[in-house]
Amino acid sequence: MSRSWTAQHPQGGLRGLQNLEVRQPVPDLDELYAQTRVLLMPSNNEPFGRVALEGALAGCPLLLHRAAGLRETPVPDFCFVDGLSPDVWERRLVEFLTAGEAGALSMVREIRESAEGYDPGWDAFLAQLTAMLRIDHQSARC
Image (cartoon, rainbow, N blue to C red):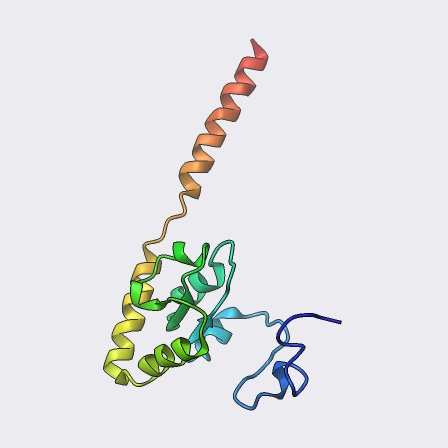
């Protein structure tokens, strides 16, 4: 039996909530992100914010807990929520949902632009690794 908070929900987990849809894995994440009004990540521990980054690139409004890995997600500061209190999250969610169309579009644009500039440095890392392997390979021939 799972010991997570979802299994202990009085209605048998998250499936009992009327305002939440629990889905099976989907092949097209872009379609899923396009249907997302606000992507909430109240994660207490997240090694890297891949889902947050994907959501930002897809143009989703985001609310992220300022946890270790999520803190490194390249999005504006207004996306972060300090603390895990449901009251704090509710207040921030209401701010997002009542920002009006112009405010929401502005937020989404800023989130997407921040994420688009993200460069994890993989090209530089691979170039250095390739150069090191060439050196080692050439050394072995000598």
